[in-house]
Picture (cartoon, rainbow, N blue to C red):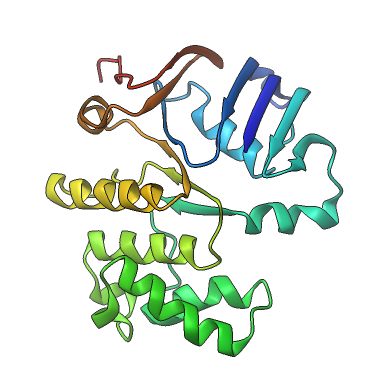
Length: 229
């Protein structure tokens, strides 16, 4: 599903080695936490997965794509196979909840019929069927994150990457979002969650990949966060 083999990335502008000889394999249907101090390399790993950055050495395979050697014209197909959820939601402010989710399908050329069929399904999955006509400024933080998750699910990707999905949420709402991510994973979607949320990592007992200074220092099944924040 996702394989890193001896992957290194150096940022030319400041000569920072963001990842150093990183290797791991994430199988279909896994739930994996990506943890580490700020600046450790977590964001670089997610950017390498979706080819926002290109590795300087090593091999990356994602959903059958050879990410390091793929042609530009194939990058959109890679990204269609990955749903992204961000800490700051990144919703379109002038579109309704329904339109925000539909837009994810429109950009890949889905038919109006497919959109009309799929959008209500994913809104129901995240508990927002009654918010379809609302705009983002009418929503709570938790509701905005649910919209972002529905948008990530719209094209039924095999993988979802959530980058600090609970970072802007209160504890109770964060718990609801993390439970929703776990539920989606239980239906077969591979879930990668980059987070500083120690309590969730420790309590959920999922696989943990820990990054320090660009190096993969720990890969544990049912692992713990392992850092003092």
